Length: 250
Image (cartoon, rainbow, N blue to C red; front, side):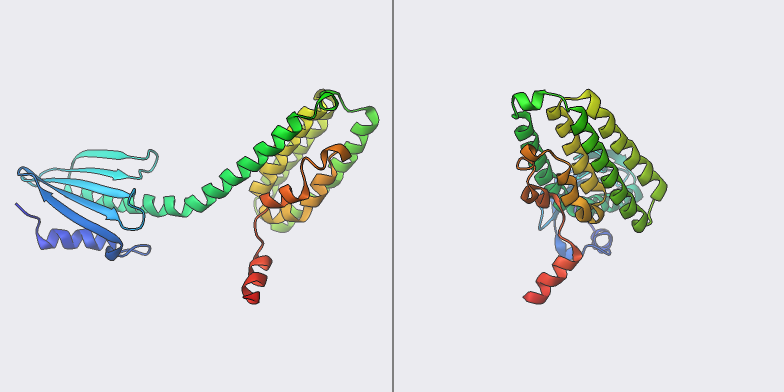
């Protein structure tokens, strides 16, 4: 038993879309008597693969593919031909999505590592970190938080996307930091603050670039070395201007 050229041609047509060409894949078949197995492997990332079983009576197809939409691997049984083709398209869509997410995931992991490093240093502040802010220190930080909130708010307005939702979230987060000044020790407040710097950078990278230095100025003098400007810069994305400048200099 073997597959018809027409059927294999239909498979190749599915593999030919806006993101892929049939030549991006290796297609192999194996005859097991009562069914034929077809294996489609993405040449450049072989962990992304589609395995199908076409039964002799042509009444059912099985499919197993990686990646799935939610889970890494998916199994489908008793499919009709049209369903089988549909899941090839699903697999291709998932493969493209996973490929585009990989660099982002790598950057997130780098950011997580930097954040963890900050938190470990803050956590080792000793007796000073276990004390609470004085009334004067708290008031100074509140004033700086007010200035930071205004800078971030202006950045959100200039962005002109989902303004009210972003503003509400910003005000809520800054209010939390204000309230924490009276409740948390210096060490724990700084941990809370470091998390919010991190989330601001993730949500609004271009805007945060403009206020990153000011964010660091919120920190007490003896903690600025812990959250250094160099470490903060590592969390910031490369701007379009920097990319253009690097390109022009080559």
